Length: 211
Image 1 (cartoon, one colour):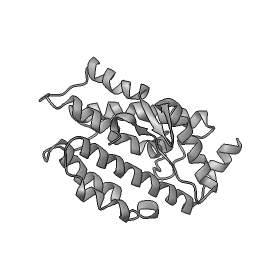
Image 2 (tube, helix red, strand yellow):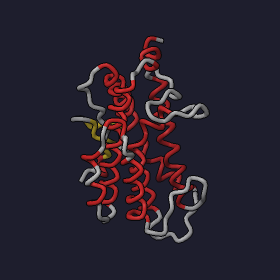
Image 3 (tube, helix red, strand yellow):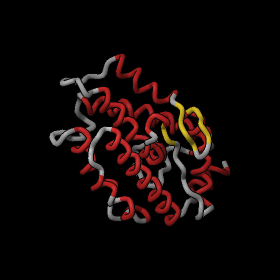
């Protein structure tokens, strides 16, 4: 109950500071995904230093507008309501959303109380906040899986490939850990950022993506 009271009491400047760190980390991971896929990331790299507290200029969305055509082709449109590659991306994101939500609850936090996402009908708003930098991991995996498929559909092999991300080894700070363990440490770091303005929210790095 004490942790929950602290969570509810996070002030506006702290929320904005944390969200800036999350957006910067997400953009960095998008850059890694583009580089691993042999795509040009210079335009997105320029945005990193422009992200301000609260991402007031919405560089997250600006980066996405450049990122998707570079990664998936100029005709691709990220549409969560459509099938094909979009449905496969949705499935991958749902895996990480659940992973983060479980870690939040285990850490004594309520996953519906977000720091950026605010929707009264979203019971996992905070999970949606925290999972943002994991999305490019899914994008990278899906892009690799679909490289030779003209009509991609969710099937057993694709599900297993995406689920395998959860058992991956990651580098968290100076340690090599299973992703599930690192996620719990990430959530502990998240809590530290509430009261320490110098604390940085450090995300794990997937060993297969270290370049």
